[in-house]
Structures are given as structure tokens and as C-alpha cells.
Length: 273
Image 1: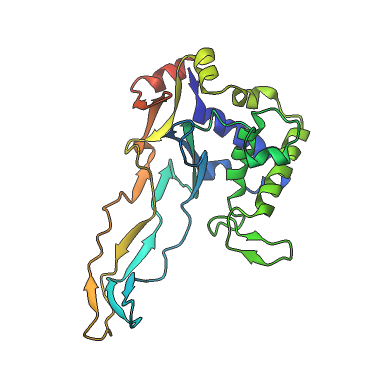
Image 2 (image 1 turned 45 degrees about the vertical axis):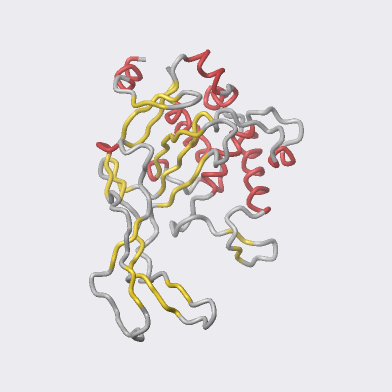
């Protein structure tokens, strides 16, 4: 059996210990978890989820009349909040999720990444994704890293051309340190290869699977007024999302090519191995 999220966590710890520009990242400040994602389906291979954003300023949604441009309806006032994820006594700043089996089947061919890695082996695409998600972590803990243009101006695009180029530089920097192949060799197998080599593929998930900690809206208790009489107020119908998570909310799941299932005995077997 292979615990894929544990392997990814160990790889990330090795990366931040070897790549100077990522050395500010505390491995205890993030958690790696797995989500299901079919190979060949649309969707990200991995995602960096920020938990350290402060509560937003109050706001509301509104609707305008297409003819007059006047606001005819608006929602109740609300704020956006980050959920708490506390492991032990530590509140996490980030979650990093990987879609299985889609991530494990990623290759350089037919991807834009290949332009940055001429002659590289296919599995380097996965290493690029791992470092890509680490690079999203903001050194100032203000959210997702804000990128700069070549002229020094900020860009609101998280995935600018400069971003991909910087990630490729970090990948080459990491490999140039001659890391122990045992740390990253699991990336060389696709999902079928992992199944043949290890049998079962498991990973950390949340008991609310497929749900996971996400930002939520909270209605303001004291609602500002001041609208004209023609403006109608629409109640906020935000889903009642869980707001605090601990290690008791973590689970283990086994992943397959077309599905996943909760794995009751995975933890015991993993410890025995």
C-alpha cells in the first residue's frame, strides 16, 4: 500500500529544505489531502487553498435594471470568512489538494509545460505541479502569492507567463541539489503503475468528502440601511458550511481509476507497514 499524500508531504518538505526561495514555508503550516479526479476529465491536477485570509469587508450582491442601470435588488450584507483547520495546537494557513488518479497520470506530452523542460522525462510534469502549488504560498501570509509583471507592476493573474517560468526555474534548482531519488521516485509511476507496484493507493481526505474546508459567507447581524424604497432586499441563502476542522475531521480514502471509498483499516495497515 502507498499513502500518496504522505509521499507528497515528504517531497514538499524536501523541496522547501533545498530551494532557497521556498525556505520560508513551514511544513507544519499546510496539509496535503486528496480529492477524486478522473484521468482525462477537465479540472486542476492540484490546488492551493488559502486559510489565512482575514474576514472580508462587508459587502452585498446586487442586480441592476438593464435599461436604467439602477440597482433594483440587492442581497443582505455579509462578510466572507476563512474556516479554521487546527491540527494539534496549530492552526493551518494552507491546504494543498491533489486530484487522484488525474495527478498521477499527468505527463509532459501535449502540455504547455513541455516548453520549459526540453528532453525531460514525463514525470517532471508532476514535480512541476508540486512546486507550482508551493509557489502559490505567499511569503507574507496574505493569501495567494501576488505575481509581478516583468516591469515590476502587480498583476491580478495568478498564472501569468512569469509564474510558469519561475516555477520551472525552481524545479531545475531543486533537481540540481541532487535530492535522494527515493523521495520523488513515486512520481515516475502513473496510477496503474502505482497499483501494480503497491497494490492499494490511499490518501488523507476529510470525513465530509467530497467536501473540504472552504470560505463561507456570514450574514451581518446589524444590516445597514439607506436604500430607496424601490430596492428590494434578497435574503442570503449561504450553505451552512462547517467552520472549524480538527484532526478528528480527517479520514483515509482508497482511490481507484473511477471512484474512491472510505478506508476504515488503512491507517492501521499503514502504521504496520
